[in-house]
Length: 286
Image 1 (cartoon, rainbow, N blue to C red):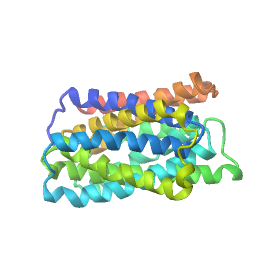
Image 2 (image 1 turned 135 degrees about the vertical axis):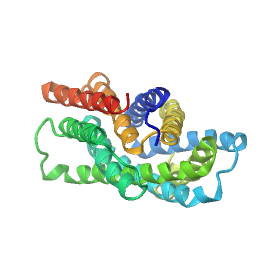
Image 3 (image 1 turned 135 degrees about the horizontal axis):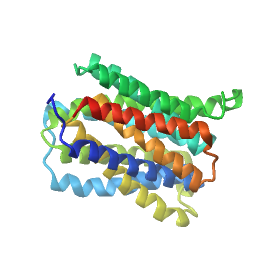
């Protein structure tokens, strides 16, 4: 890895974090979550089809990573959908996102051979602690919340898995645009088919008011992940994974301002911890 990371890399990841929080907020706003996620997937499938025609095919060595990522991404969406059905946005989103950085750090070292310095390890740890604080600022959840928490934690495991898969895949692909295009083109129809199997023709009945939010969410989702995969081809995987978790801070604001969920002092402190961890990571790459 290069000693210094170009400033465009953290800038792209931070932009992706904002887009990611916004599209998740749009998904949570849609009352029928299955309809919302279906619309999002159909939207970025259409976008991906255009991108496939405009970008070269990924190299053969990238396809095992790409197929693995597709399976993990679809599973992640199903778990996240369930978490949003059962829990509050302000808790489910940070728990899903916050459980991933340490897993990504461990997997990037053991699977991809990345090396983390002391500052990077400290930054990842501080960010993860801040994210945990955001998730549990209102106390330890009761038994009734366990299914929602299990879905959110399962999402985090899937996020860690596909982050590592894509970090390896894009390094073998020879084309960032082609890799992202095929990733979204392959995964998009799968969730839509699963939703159709569950609901049949009634799936999109009465979905009219949700259509603009779902379509916009799909475009933002593709743009956010495209920026992340581009950054993964140029920077340290664990550092990028931690930086993108700044979306938690944006999500906390969305939860407070849009969904009227209480932020509170503990969540504010946890947000500050996330920002402190980002500062540590930036110091690790002057």
